[in-house]
Image 1 (cartoon, one colour):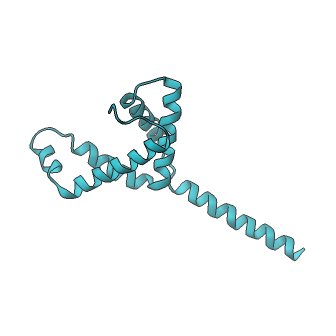
Image 2 (cartoon, helix red, strand yellow):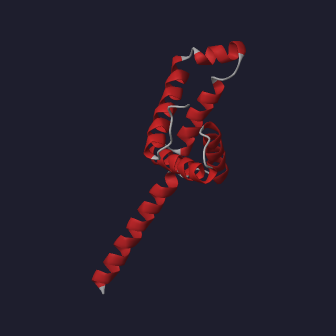
Image 3 (cartoon, helix red, strand yellow):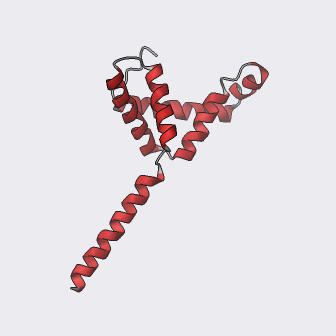
Length: 121
C-alpha cells in the first residue's frame, strides 16, 4: 500500500508540474483569435486550411515565449508602425528594433513549422 501511495503521489506531482508548464505560456482566448485573424489576413488562402496553420503557428510560438513576453514584442512591433516623429524615434531605437527582430524570428520558425508560406509576404 505504501508503494501505491508513493506512485499516486509521484503521479500527482508529475501531472501538476505538466499542468503548470502548459498553462505558463497559455495565451488568452481573445489574443489567440486576434493572432489567427491577423495571420489569416497576412496569408490568404483556403480559410479552413489557414485557420489550422495559423492556430498551429500560435501554439508553436506559445511553446517558445510567454504571453507577457509576446505582448512586449508585439507592442514594440506595433509601436514602430506609428507615423511621424514618434514612430521614427521608435524605429531608430536599437532596443525596440531588437525586440521586433526577435518576434519576427520566432514567428518565422513557427510559420516554417506549420507550413505557412512566407515568400509571398
